Length: 508
Image (cartoon, rainbow, N blue to C red):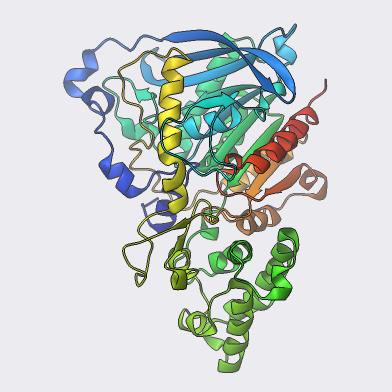
């Protein structure tokens, strides 16, 4: 697919956060990583491993565990090394039969993001942040992650090829790894190799992806089954996107206008911009009222398009103003269609503030208040530096990963797909229908304006799942943003929800 606006939207998603600017400004990849010619005769990279032993207080109990940071070479059928994956595996000590212990594979999105964000969100150590997830000046530091999933499952964090420390082998063209199917195929081969080397084939198996990592998980559900006969117990979709037209603010596509509206509403509620009768509601109540309006009157108005009468347009604008805190005049000027990139700037323009995309609770300041679009995402800017610095220190100090290789937080994965919108929702439907016990948990942040919660609700409602299969799909909601786990209250709830999901999806 072309790198159009919807792809740009995904590329800034953290859960992958890699904007085009970040791609252009990143350190150039080493010659051996992307070129052929003189490099092709180099010896393949040697696999490395660093094994360390730790303990952490998780879920109210002290858990001893082994951390294995390492690289796996993935070969083709002729035995030639194609690429090297970097991973960190956390396995609980003292397990009498590891074959019965759940194993989860986790990654970020982007699609060019390394896995450091979920690593320090779901793993046994987390970064010290403010209670709402806000950052602070260095030093940062890490502490026990009392809400890690390690009490319920072993976890393997994987950097996508050309991100983190994962690299194409010398002489290999990086483009062959950069596409939805190609990416998922090599991930599937890594998972096959990990299960084989560590004798985990009989373990209950899970995927935990964030943002575009949820797109990867959906595609992986099919590729793992077809390519390696690997059947999954469960998939956790954190801040999910499975149908990209739900995010694609292009002329003629009114889905995002309708599906982002409830997120606009809860954000206005958070910033105390709604009418008193809405403001006094709980977030769940105001979100539901916004859903009802979006799917009802608002959707009908959008469907009429240019057939909408002046009176109908004025009535809808007034009601839309009630659910957004924006002026009726402004909404009429936008033809009732609120683009997210304008909304970030418009919502608190009178306060000379912008709101965040990854987490709309956070506010930012631009050079002036008259611009059409914000200069940056204040939520991303708030904690990016803390996350990167803390992970870099943790990897060397605690995991003893000694390398001079550059860690690509946002890797160069261009070009990505050119096949149009990926139909991964159908891939997931097929996997769930064939693997009738496969369960899926969708994790939604109310203040996530990158992958809006009503958009993935819409996707789930249009997957065509039979009722007996649909019962295997569940949702959980959090008063947080795209990176649900940065918020102190949210990550405690997330821990409980994911642990319960895992423990209920296999036979003990």
